[in-house]
Amino acid sequence: MIRALLLCCALFSTSVFANTKVLFETNLGNFVIELNEQAAPVTTKNFLRYVEDGSYEGTIFHRVIGGFMAQGGGFDQEMQQLSSYAPIKNEANNGLKNKVGSVAMARTNDPNSATRQFFINYSDNSFLDYSASNPGYAVFGQVTSGFDVVQQMATIPTKSAGFMKDVPSTPIVVTKVTIQK
Image (cartoon, rainbow, N blue to C red; front, side, top):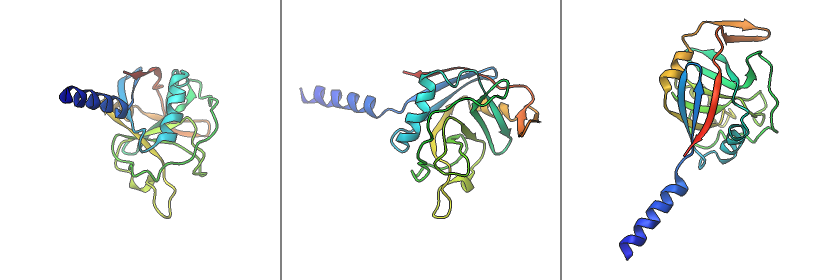
C-alpha cells in the first residue's frame, strides 16, 4: 500500500513539475524548445499565450547573425510587424544564462518592453545576462532537439530590408507551433 502511494506521488509530482515543450515547424525543419516555467513564470506564460493563439505561425526569423543569435516571432513574410499583447516584466534576474541553445526574450532599450519576439543563442552571450549594471535579456527556455535546424538558419545569406539588417535572403518561415504533451 505504501509503495503504491509513493509511486502515485512520484508520478503526480513528475507531471506537475515537468517543463512544457513547444515544437516549432519551419520550412527548414523542426526544433523543440523546453520552457522553464519555474525560473521564468511571467515570460513563459507570455510566450505560451502567443503559441496558444497561433500568433507565431506564419512569422519569420527576421534577424539571424551567425555566432550570435537568431531572432523571430514578430514579423510576417512581408516584413510587417505583428500586433502584440502588453509588454512584460523583465525576468533576466532568474539565474538562467544566455548560453548556446538558450531562448530569451528580445526587447528594446526599456528592460520591461518584451512582447512576442524571442531569440535563440548560437554562442555563450554572457554580455546579455543580468548583472548589477545590466538589466539583461530574460532566458526562459532551451532548444532540446533540432538545434541543427537553428544552426542551419545562420548559413542563409542575409540582406538589409528597410531599416533592418541581417534579414535572411530566403525567408525562414514558422509554419506550425504546437505544445507537446
